[in-house]
Image (cartoon, rainbow, N blue to C red; front, side, top):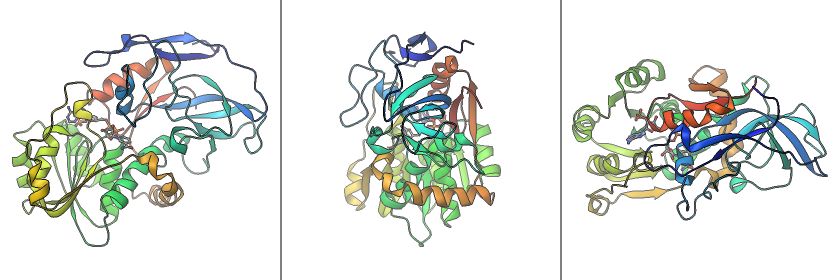
Length: 345
Ligand SMILES: NC(=O)c1ccc[n+]([C@@H]2O[C@H](COP(=O)([O-])OP(=O)(O)OC[C@H]3O[C@@H](n4cnc5c(N)ncnc54)[C@H](OP(=O)(O)O)[C@@H]3O)[C@@H](O)[C@H]2O)c1
């Protein structure tokens, strides 16, 4: 592969499922490094379902902006190594994260506030943890899981029954493990028997089912006969509908995402009145709105990784040219844990 700077850009907005043909890998020119700037060479970048919401003329209101056609895709958390620096506090050789996404190199203003402050240029402590952990458990995925449980789910010492959908994915598997660490009962759902077995035997959830087996309602009745107190929703649609039916009074639903709707016409829950009749709290949120919890989350997750009580799961694609295929596979449920693209160690 070429050592010249390259970037992935969107060549057309997909209709239906994303394919690798919706993107192209192109050479890019790098500006000179100015005062207060650094040149970073990418080592790892992230692949996320939310990117699908930006592959259209207008992204959902309030969300990160759409990716313009024919331009590098900014606004994806990425890890790299500083190769040239004219910014204090960001020495050559430091491992950093930034928001410049699917490219081999980026010239970055150290003072720029990126992605609500979540992905502003930051030096990472990679002593004892692999750098890419900062795209998963110690990064945006960890923050999303942590804020979803603690702020939106308002969990405390009272043991709760929690249903986690898309539980074998990047956020889901962290929610499962964080909730188990804190003594809650976790019911997990995913899209294959293999993922279900992994969740039960390696991740250590209390019950798990394949979302394709029978109805969601019947699966939930079996896995949580007394109902659920908290539903961590990554899917929306019929999953949210099943959760509303299974919720206990005064339960909570953390609306983290609705991946089931990203590539097709959205389906709403038909039983929303149950939120009223059962006094439920449904609350949407974005991890990037809780950057103030980042240090606390990272300290706790680091200790769980170090003592082996949290399993770190990754699906890795090698080479920037593989990023579009990785996104297509992620949305089709063919990846486990955090989906990553490795450009260099
Ligand atoms: N609010 C925030 O700040 C925030 C931040 C990050 C992510 N998110 C959201 O959190 C969710 C999970 O993100 P992630 O990065 O952890 O992705 P992920 O779970 O690693 O990958 C997405 C998973 O969604 C499942 N899926 C795809 N289509 C589905 C469908 N039609 N019905 C049910 N499940 C389907 C697939 O798993 P199975 O086939 O195994 O079910 C797939 O593996 C997404 O909704 C994402 O947008 C929100």
